[in-house]
Image (tube, rainbow, N blue to C red; front, side, top):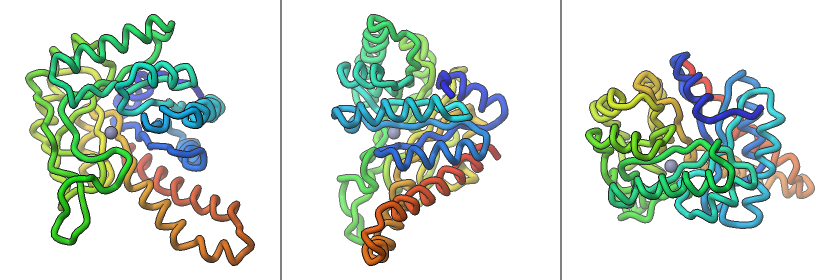
Length: 294
Ligand SMILES: [Zn+2]
């Protein structure tokens, strides 16, 4: 069913839990996420990457996700992730996105604020003041759409995301939230996009500092690789939304790699292979839903 992202997240926080968000590059994954959410009786968020939304097929995917979300028996939001381009945002919202992460985190502080304000004004001018806006303060390292960043190779020769680009400055939080009017705030507290170099080290002290300075829900990106016990702790610090991408993709690709040959022999059986894709994504989503509601 349709929901407002901020309402969904605030409701979860009141129950001491957080809402998981999953990047969907395709419809099979989205079906799996919604299936898991319905089975758990909890809401979830379907994330669309900006590179996806920038294409005609991506906009059709958003329209399909909108239909899927509205027909679900639990609240499902459709959010455009990490967006900066006004046209992509306008198109994604027209296609059915109900929320947007306006990501000016790589910009200087004042420019970040201006970006969020301008894009909010543009949405209002589009007649879509109802769109929920998440903003981001502090830089997250790593590439959202790849498990391995383009950063320096480690000793094993594989590349991993860099160390965090810049932690959120808690002293800026009150001003930033007031001036942007953001309804959710994505923070950088040692989390990274993609795979972690070594053990993830979340800065609980920074998260705590941020949590006492604003009442709006906080968002943790790059949750793949953060142990479940840590995620449970985050929900107690006003983190009401947690984004998953890398682990979900890694699991699906591993299943496809392992099963493709057998399904070729079985008569180019794409339908059954898609079934396994669904099971992999659904199992991952179910685990995330259970972890965040502990
Ligand atoms: Zn992200």
